[in-house]
Each structure stands twice: as C-alpha cells, then as structure tokens.
Length: 470
Length: 100
Image (tube, rainbow over all chains, first blue to last red; front, side, top):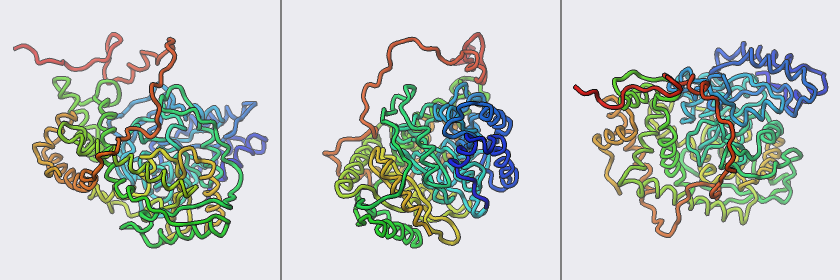
C-alpha cells in the first residue's frame, strides 16, 4: 500500500508552486482507478468536479491552508447539486440545494473534494455492511470490514485515495473505523463543528470530524472545520484551538479506563496495545494509573435507547413528499408507509421501531427517561475522573477488523462493537483513535479521551502515542 | 421489569412509525427487539430516583437568531427535488377516501 503524502506537505507544495493541485489530484485519481473496484470506498467519485476545483486552486492567488489537498467526504454531508444518499434507497436521486457548512469551509480552504464515501445507511452500523450500495472492504484485508459507519472515509484514507476525509460520529462512527483501518480519527467536542448540512441521525450525539493518516494532518483538518455557525443552534462559540506542535506529555496524568480494558470481549492483543501505549506515555514523562468509571457499563444500553429514539424522530421526514423516492399508493397515508418500508433497509427500520417503542406511551419512563438519567450518571463518572486525570485511555474497538458477515445476523453483537466509544458521545467530550501496533496483521487503535474542549491536550497525547508506535 | 415485547405490540409500533412492514419483518423484529430490550433491562432496573435526566451534552438554552429576514433556498430548486410538485407546491396522492 502506498500511503498518501501528508496533507500538510501537499498544501505547502501547492502554495509554493512546487506542485500543481491538478497534478496532486491526478495522482490520487490514479490510485482510486487502481483499487476502488476492490475496496468500494466511494458511492460517487467526483473526478470532473474535482478537476475543475483543482484547476481553480491552481489559478487562485491566495490558495488557503488545504491548498490542493484531496478530501473524501462521507455521503451524509450535503453537497450542492451532487447526489447525497446516506447509502439509502429512500434518498434515491436527491441532489441537495445547498452545501453543508463543513463543505463550504473545505472549499474556502482550497481543498479538492474527490468523492462521496460509503457508510452504513443513515450512519447506523459498525461495519459499513448496512449500505444499499454494498459493503466497503478493509484495504488491509479485503475479506474484512472497515468498521463503520464512516467505513468508506476510513478506507479511502487507508488506501491512499485521499490524504484526508470527513466522517460523522454518533456512537463511534469515526473512531472505530479509523481503528480498524489503521488511520487517525477524531470525534471533536460536541458543538465545535457545525452540523448544518449533516443529515441528522441522533442530534444530541452527532458530530462531524476528521480522518487522516497521521495526527498532524487530523489537527490541520479539524482547525479548518472548527467554529461557530449561526445555521446550527447547537454550535458553540469556542475559539479555534492551536492543535499543532509537539507531543510533550511530561507531568500529564493519564487514566486507563478499567471497565474498557478488562471488559468481556476485549481481545488480549488489543488490551496489550493499550497498555503498551500507556507505558510509552509513562516513559515520556506522564504518570499512568487505572481509573474506574462504573456507569460506563450501561453506556451501550443507554445509547441504544437514546440514539434510536432521536433517530425515529429525525427520520420521520422521509415520507415520500419532499425528496427522494416515492412508492405508489392510492392515498397519502399508505404512500408514506409503503415508501418508508421500501426505501429503508433492515437496520434503519429496526432502529426506528426500537426508538418509537422507547418513546411510546407506557414505556417512555422505563426506557427513554431512564436512559437519560444514566446519561447523567456517566457524565458524573467522567467528571470525577478528571479530578485526578488530564486524559483517559482505552481501546477504541474491543477487537481488530472482523470478517464480512460475522455479525450481520445478530444485531446486538454488532452494537457491542461500540462499547468503548458510545460513552464519549453521551457526555459530549472529545476523543480520538490513534494506531498503535497490530494483531493478526491488522491495525489496532488506542482511544484518547479528553474533557469537553480538551482538544489541545488530547492532540499532545495522541502525538506522543503516534511517535512511540511500534 | 416489563414483559417481553409481543407481536401485536410490534404491529402497533409499526403503525406509529408509519412503516408498512411485511409479516416476515414483523416476526423478525419481534425477536430482535426483544433481545435488544433484554440487554437494556439493566438500565431499566437501576435506581435513579435522585438523578436528573440529561437530554443534551451542552447546556445551551434559548438560542435565538436576530429577527431579520434572510433569503431562503430557491423554491423551484427545492420543489425540483420532490417526487411530485405542481403550482409551486408539493403534490401528494389524495388525503381522504373518495365518496362512493
């Protein structure tokens, strides 16, 4: 596998005139031509649009921080005039009349959007097998999944199709595929990146974030998309942090999350990698200790009530009236129900049903209300941990990439892939996955978790882990 | 602890969710939702009498924009993406049954 040149180097070369954006793009389109048939990272490759964008960058005076850098974007981010499918049949033929805010920011920074990447339908899944357009395959082993739901974005970076990609993370959908594909993936603090134009799954949990081959490139992309947006009422006016710089961890207090290391189903090789990363941080001058977050053991249950409940509400808009496909039926009520049954795949229907049930009369308090209270308990556990620690460490995924089809027959086994990642979405904190070691020849990801707006310290620790990686 | 979800309950929820599920889908979902809700039973059984619920991770309230007109999306472009439109409006099949 030939890794893509780091994004920062491309931008610097294009700005100085040493390389043209067009030349950079053609190199990446050649890589896509060579391997996309095997990997299927993209729902749509935008070769013509990308060539026009690259030529515009080459002609521009002030070229921007991502000058000429090819970027792959998850196909649940709206791109004006370009099909945006969420890997669902229900949005068949729909072309958004506007760009997501992150897409506008990429274009303004001189980036070149190369294509729309595959995902689990409406970002619901952990393997990218729930796509109406077929699965994406892991570039490290084509018999294995890339993780999900942003599996296409992770695979695109791992295969060198683009040095940068955007995904969305509702319960681990950036971090888990990053871990399984051996790249860096970041879930920023909730509210720091505008969700305007991200097609909603669970609005109190969804967050857009970067994929990159390395920590520095991930920082560069996050700095580009960060910032308040009046079009997203949940975005926060936090000043853009400086995420560049070194990996000095001297004096930092690092907590190893006991429940996520010792939990059932954690591969011993994954546990060893996290302990190896912790030892490397200790060697670099940090102190490391174990910390217990007992409420996180209820994270999966709370998440799989809250996220489907929000999804059942958000996905009510797909009714065959305003966009996408419509099933023919004699009256509007039958048309709505038939369109939704034909247009949605099995996992989306399962979650709509689960969420509708959890919100329905007689069950609201026992399930949805209770899950919201557990959310409070998990927030309290993390707050207590941050009295003693600056950052927390855990596996990103309990296992390395699994084989295609291994978990599709048992929805609950698929949900358990997210055991280490969902607590971070419930609390709004930031977290990222950094590659560290391998097992069975497949990459392992270590998760670095930091408090709300703790991105600067999180990136320092991530850089130290990256530098020490075997 | 609540009893396991039944087939009639699944049919009821499908109606609430506006999903015209097939019999096979209802059968499969009855088992799958039961298994997922069993896993959630631990959450349902926790004593949380003194714990307030969290609906949202960021405590923002009453985020209002200035009350100034701004252009929206072009109407024709939006309607052009609809399955059917007529006279500047979305078009749907009939809403009520026709009189005999």
